[in-house]
Amino acid sequence: MDPTSSKAAGELARAVELLGGQAAVARLVGVAQPSVWKWLRRGKHLPGEHVLKLEKALQEIGSPINRHDLRPDLYPREDHAVSHDTATMEPAR
Image (cartoon, rainbow, N blue to C red; front, side, top):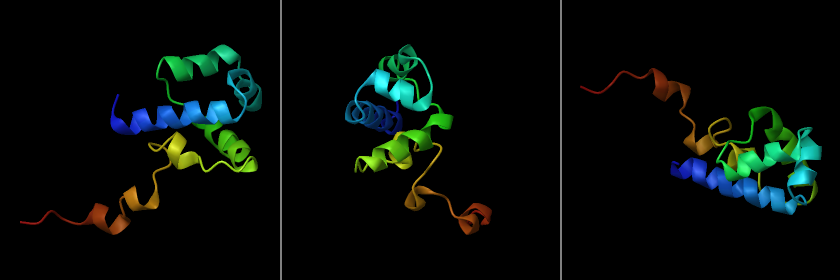
């Protein structure tokens, strides 16, 4: 597991704990509890369609965990995003 995935997995585990456990998160996002267990125990990513629901619930309880923490591959922080200008530049010779 790469460091980014490992950090995201840790943040997901923290989020589940803050929100009241696997069953509570399952109800929140509309899945069965075993799905949440798989995300946590088998190193699966939080599916993208659930990220914003989880982020909203976390914000409501005052948690600093956000979409960038839960799925940095889908929601990179601005300082990690490649700018349009950089992406179109020709390599130096």
